Image (cartoon, rainbow, N blue to C red; front, side, top):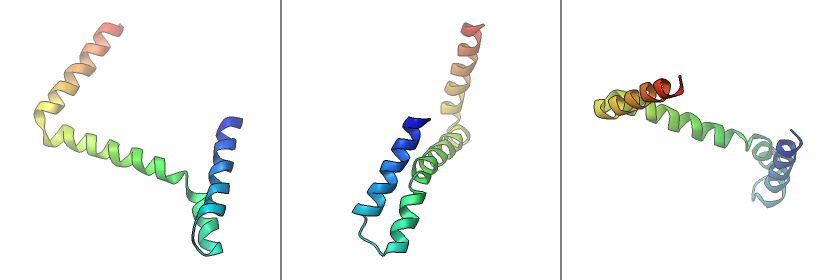
Amino acid sequence: MQVVLAIYVLGVAAGLFFTDARPLARVALALAWPIGPLAFLTVVTGLLVAALYIFPWFGAVVAAGIVAGWWLSS
């Protein structure tokens, strides 16, 4: 947990000192920077779910992989 807090504090410091914006915008960007990776994961997950529906062959391969992994792990 200390490593995560240290990374967050370094990101806040970088956002405060290296951002070319007004002070209020600097504070907002510095405090909100961890939302970026979460947004990235949300978008990629949504695209993969859409690909499962739009491209049936992709969905079939993924389903077969999930079944094979479940079968091999039990």
